[in-house]
Amino acid sequence: MTIQTLGATCTKEGVQFRVWAPLAKKVEVLLEHPYPSTRVSLTAEDGYFTAALSQLRSGIWYRFFIDDQGPYPDPCSRYQPQGVHGPSMIVDNNTYQWHDHDWQGVTLHGQVIYELHVGAFTPKGTLDAAAEQLEYLKSVGVTLIEIMPLNEFAGQRNWGYDGVALFAPSHNYGDYDALKRFVDRAHQLGLGVILDVVYNHLGPDGNYLPTFSPFYFTDRYQNEWGAALNLDGEHAAPVREFVLHNACEWIEQFHLDGLRLDATHSIYDSSPTHILAELSRHTRAAAGNRKIVLIAENEAQRASQLLPHDQDGFGIDGMWNDDFHHAARVALTGRRHAYFHDYTGKAQEFVSGAKYGFLYQGQYYHWQQQRRGEHVKHPALQCINFLQNHDQVANSLYGTRVNQLTSPARYRAFTALLLLAPQTPLLFMGQEFGATTPFHYFIDHNDSLRKAVHQGRRQFLAQFPGVASVESQAIVPDPAVESVFQDSKLNWEERERNRSILDLHIDLLKIRRTDRVLSKQDATQFDGAVLTDHAFLLRWFDELGDRLLLVNFGAEQQVQPIAEPLIAVNANMKWQVFWSSENIRYGGIGIEHPDTSSGWYLPAETAVLLVEQPIKDNVS
Image 1 (spheres, rainbow, N blue to C red):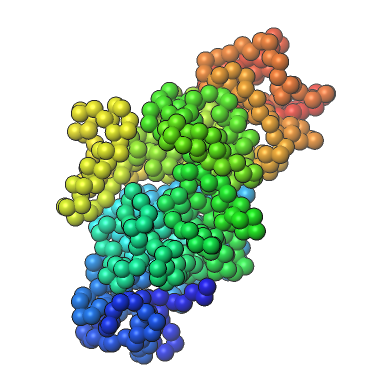
Image 2 (image 1 turned 90 degrees about the vertical axis):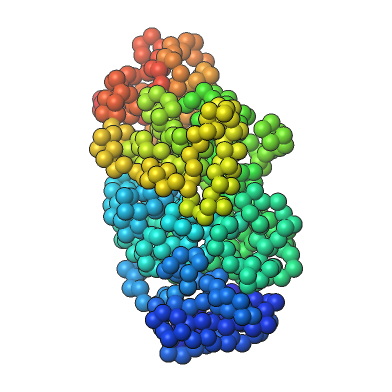
């Protein structure tokens, strides 16, 4: 498929307009501020309307009339200076002066992902303000920024998953070039940036696509968030072009290092070639010589999407691993309600997860009363592990972070597992310093939608028995109240107040980055074993000295007998404590060597990293 430019494109001669309106008899562009108000007819050709207008320039506002109805903003607008219902603005993508000419892009290996919401990340809530924190994130050990969706949405605040103008960075976060400045600065610091994009639905307010064509959406598929895009029905080709053009533009024009694809299980396409497989090919072509990463969220854990194209996969690089989160959440809190039902939080799940990535690879899943996942062999690094993300923090009555739901010691132990295991770790903004600010679901819809969304939140959270009570339902936060958004902003004073937690993350990420064994993320030279229901070990094999991570998230254990060969040291070697979550630097009570003269002792709620050293080596 050859992707042609949509919307308003600046050329040397002026501006080219192109819009898909297959049932329209007449389409006109209304030129507005600061241009004298003028209506110009577009020429029809194969369902598209085009016009090449000379002497126009960037900065001019415009809208379209469809058969004298309107005016409507451009469905492919690059910038909406007055929001989703206002006029679109012509922008010139050739004027920004980039400083990242030597940037080669990123691959998934070695990445530490950091998810952030631009509006809640800083007090100002802009891309320029977020860019001021990039040096700090670099110092922590973050390597890849994942920005929650930021295309234009209704109102002044939104998670981003109600976006409607898919090509337009939200005016709430800065001018059109603000995202370019952010990415440019990140690249200068050696940081990659990927963007969360939503192709499974559009938001309910300000979606003008049906005004231009009734074929953008279909009712042939059930979608819990809104009508699904028509990717495989009548007149689907222009819709596919729309999606592919959008994905490629983020990569090409904003120099992004990839995309996080939201809820791919709800992107319905029965075409011979799935839209995501096409997207993978097209975005990599748009990146040119730069390498990019594509990460899928897929609740069904269709791991075959991670296979290369020649193996009937989509060519996706990585996938969010809900299994790790859910098992860890049960272990950290002891609660198994709702979609945590099929997890025990016992040691076996973490050994299996470290070795095989996903826990469910086709087994029956009681919560959904069906089989879940696929058995596909893939590198460990393709699983994106996390203890927190935007969804999981907000899926609670108070938007509480998981570090507030467990003991500090147990949380430190699980942080070590997250950051040292072979899988690719993801941190949610503020997690690195133990943020205690909540993260709620927030919107700024009109009054009619506001009530429906609030009721929808009540119904969703009612799957947790405690929140289903009358008392809890009465205090489920209204997502449209501004204070709900303001409360979700990070409190940066906590960064120094919780310095011990920040140091924990900095030290662990340094180990992950610099240790010659752990940094390989090689699950083929790796094994693990269960010691008790609440204790396990992971072992990395290396000819110059193995690594052993002991994790005990239960009570202290004197493990005798210990008939487990993976804990045995090699000949003429000894285990040396390299790192412990109980270091007083992190708020612990002090480091203890688990290999004692009387056997193995596992301190309560502790993770310890051991390295093999020659017996003659007295290095402490």
